[in-house]
Image 1: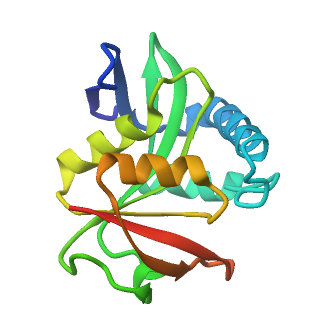
Image 2: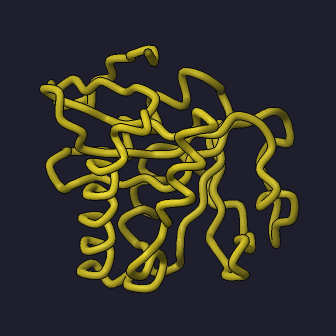
Length: 173
């Protein structure tokens, strides 16, 4: 059974963060479906399209212990990947990282629309595990850009993802 962590969203509500289990996958897929629709409605239709992240990617994240779910009252409301150690996608950047030491990476943040600040919950959880974080987002994902800088992430430059598309890269320390 995975460890559980309680994190406050800063607005008086606590959420439980835990590693995802394979049996969580149907609920996780619903969360990502809602997040894709939100992204489309917010002017960012291409970052995840209709099928990213894939079931295979999410399953791989779960098996590796890198996918976390955010729950309240026993219901999954959000998910994110948190990966400790170097991310090959970040080996090359058109720009410069603020720090070259050890870091953790946050990918694939999603919620079902019911959380007040999913990104803060994910960032709080990750920053308690490692002091330096990296994250990237699509140029059209204005909401995530605002959330990153609002939390204290600094824009560092452009990275290229595994599918060959550019992303805005940020670091927190």
